[in-house]
Length: 319
Image 1 (spheres, rainbow, N blue to C red):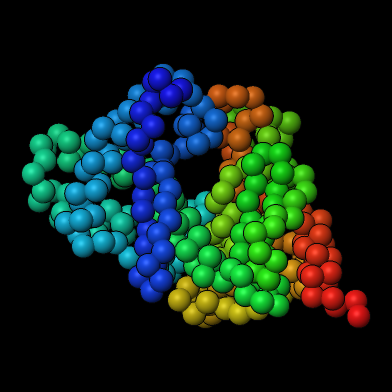
Image 2 (cartoon, rainbow, N blue to C red; image 1 turned 180 degrees about the vertical axis):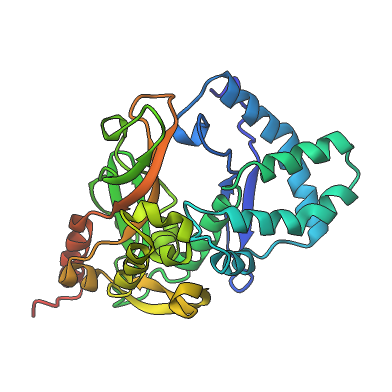
């Protein structure tokens, strides 16, 4: 693919204004047959070329004109407007789009180019997802390498393995096989036998206490919880049993604006056997078919048990 697509694809750069640290992500391509879901047909490549040649350069100018975009402020509003900020980003994306409309149409662009960019973002309700990932990555990196800490700072999966990192255990990954999504809604013509094991970097969102931990904020996501809205509320409350605090930045309306549960503690996961709930996409196990559904997956217990054993050895807790 290197000969077809330039390696200089545009990226989103997000900066922690306190530490100065920066992280990056690609722009969100949307759903269906897209590269980040394993597709690589002509439609996919054409979209990527447009993102490289048009979207990236335009967004650079727009964000500079806007003076930067606050990821946390948009997510805080999105939570109160029905997003859980992983599988549902409709509100957050619309807030982002509203914040860039004036600079988009005030910089020196042809009307056609400005409308192309507007329509691409407006037609992709997950556009803000990748910015959420960068913000969550920065937040969890700020919690890394704290002596004696049992807080999870990363969860990730690659379609084969699922791994976690823990603050007090450095750069070590604790890995077990990636699980299948058991609670999922599939696109017409597909079912559980078509899905690959869970995949992607986006579980950093749940690590930070959004997504599956905030599903009570998203009534539209209730069907993914295997029942009605009360089941979704129950999941958020249950996640509070394996975390150490609540994030007052993200108040959940259905819980009287109680903050989302945050700070997964490996000790609580192992003790309660309550597993982190992750909102995820289902990818077809055959190359090139892309996304075929979405649902909820549970992080594997073995990762947390391994991490706790390693923590005990490092800090000589057996003594």
